[in-house]
Picture 1 (cartoon, rainbow, N blue to C red):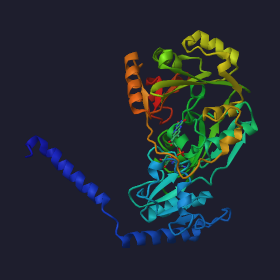
Picture 2 (picture 1 turned 45 degrees about the vertical axis):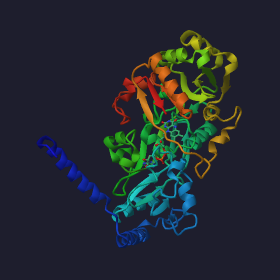
Picture 3 (picture 1 turned 90 degrees about the horizontal axis):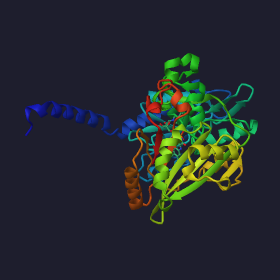
Picture 4 (picture 1 turned 180 degrees about the vertical axis):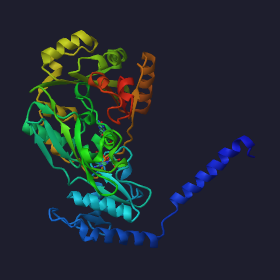
Length: 441
Ligand SMILES: Cc1cc2nc3c(=O)[nH]c(=O)nc-3n(C[C@H](O)[C@H](O)[C@H](O)COP(=O)(O)OP(=O)(O)OC[C@H]3O[C@@H](n4cnc5c(N)ncnc54)[C@H](O)[C@@H]3O)c2cc1C
């Protein structure tokens, strides 16, 4: 029986339940058919005919009656978890070839009362870019992938459908001493990755992707195309870390390139429990955020043959000899040797970081991820604000050994990350300064 003190809660929950039921009430077939017809009629309006578009927006439209509908949908699903027969499928997919197609997708899905999901690289941890519980249109950006590099100004203009791999490759084709401060996985889309923050090996020296964005072009909810000047500084702030899809569709970014030496040094060494990895990881937590900012050392924890192995994967913006003397000074416990190190141009270091075999060419950055998705996985990120004790580390190892399948990556902050004001971008406000580490599980 409800007591008087629980009543307000009960009333509130009844009200909430009613709202949820209202929101979830199934759309009747007649309504859905009407919505579809309205959507199609809207797209067919000649207002969307753009002479510079390679195909009309109708030519970029796929529905379940097209034989290639499933292939287009699956092309950028990287996780089998979101590729099941019962995973909700879009009413239609628009594979935009032109800005006007993006405008049409926004205006027509809004007018016909469909939700719009926007996908660039398709790496969303929970598949939010291509799955929804209510009828939806998928706007796929992968055809909008042009990249132009201006070495004189030290900038690049990249469309949202380009992947990080394509961007890294194009920048390196133009210069061996310019780079992009962004993530590790080359198939991440710049549309989703940049708008969510974007951390990578260069963040201790140059900050996140969002710290190096100097302009952006978006389509807003009314279908207008805006750049930094016309969208204003508030919106420009919000799309740098707050997730692009909350505010519109990102068409392109203008980014500042960052300086790297002609050769960088990389290494990957592993240490086991028997080699005292608990002590080494404990020490790493203290030193990694305070190391010279040219040096980034990520940890990757894995279980092999019922024991924990931790890989120390490093990138140094300089040559091996200088790296070894820095390591001797700051982190001798790792015992890094010259034979562990490899000197490479920056672009090849991005291939090394993706676990490509040594000497694998930079062209590997252009490979499309295989589809259909190859594996099921669940990922999440979190921030470590306090040093984890050795006891805490041992209990993590225990859980690892019990599960056998968890992989964890720890990325250190510090350096430039601690200098940039917490409110400079909308990336997880305040987190930069409180966190020495970012943990990726
Ligand atoms: C294997 C893997 C490795 C990763 N490595 C890193 C890493 O090294 N560093 C790092 O920072 N993060 C990393 N991430 C996280 C990744 O950056 C985010 O998941 C990012 O959002 C992916 O962007 P996407 O374009 O590939 O994904 P999508 O699934 O296409 O999009 C992700 C989100 O952004 C929205 N979005 C996409 N494109 C647009 C657009 N044009 N306009 C507006 N909104 C858009 C989508 O609607 C969705 O909400 C990794 C994720 C995975 C799965």
